[in-house]
Image (cartoon, rainbow, N blue to C red; front, side, top):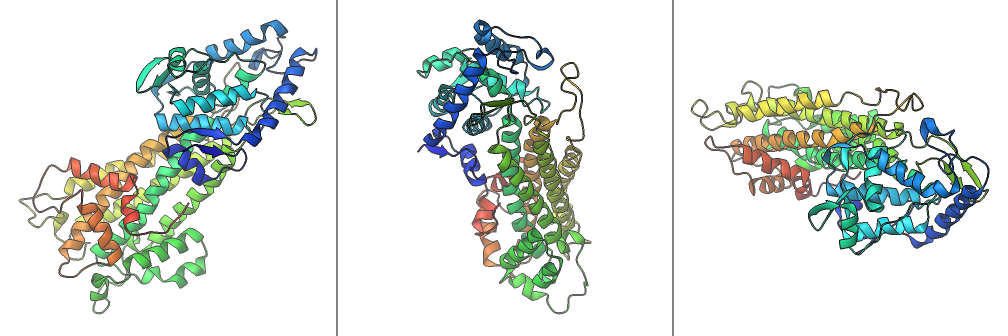
Length: 508
């Protein structure tokens, strides 16, 4: 089914569907009038005598060089070829599709000056599966994601590299095999295609969507861990969280209360438990995970705005005939959002890792066996699984250091402050992969701990989570090769199956 996207009003849910889906994508046809009006404005400027940046001038530090009308096509083509300087591994296909769809959304606002043919070719490439090969390194996040978007545009003009039907080939060959014709870029069109934040924004959105799944799962794993160590539910009392007032904290406490409702394990130690308070990793789960959820939502709103924004330069105001130079290509909002997502991912993992450490330590786990193995000594159980989570937690802490505070001048000091949004967003993929493992190991430990409490049982909701996990990770009775179990548990997190098994209602 074709997904129609609406410039200026596309939601986060629709953006996630764009990323996870593989179907055709098209702009709402009502966008065409504004696109063609701005293109007409550019065409008039290209034939005029007044210098207009990027239309009849050079680029960047070379903006003072005038370009003759007959050289316009060469100017735009040279711009693309010279900017194809990306290096590193290729961007994964789903993120490439999202980046292309974001470029469609931006062009569809009708302020970029491109012909409708440009939009139509991007739509056709998405529909027929022609995906440019985009090296992931080379952008500093201003003046837009120049190198990555140049690699996208190179395929549109019949060069560069692309994949089609699972095979890598020259861009022109990919278009031909798909029955498509390369475009010849007109005035400003090359500049409109490579100026913009769509590469950084796409990667930040991927980090957000994957991170949100991990955040949802962490609510479930934390509830499982609470029952495994026979923790108190008193800190989940709604009055506590209402008095503070943070929405994420309130929602996490309510969700955990619902998940633990009906637990026989919990009811068994309401009386006679000599412990006064649980450690912070149990007691402060709503405060920490809730704060992370608030941060993810805040970043999500920034990225939603950016996904719908016009971020190239100059901008075309067809209503007045003005063509205005500005700086919407500067990806500072995206860099900030990526840093915020990184902080949230790091902290979700940090507190989860402490819960893992709590469960494997017999002095803290309220009588669970050492390292959660029925025969400690002969077996090491989950000893090194906990070490792995510590390693990944530490790695994520380092990765969470801000990228947005870094800058370096480029392009002969014309572009003298940049956002570093691209690699700030790109690191999120590594961080979510690490977090999924931490939470997967927590689920394994918590399930093992809950089983040790038999004949006492957990709640129905958490039992559903146990069934989900046990379908891919059997109970640990004796030491075995654990790497496949950790991988399978991490997949339960990344696929949202663990959270979904409990009917957890927690939406971005």
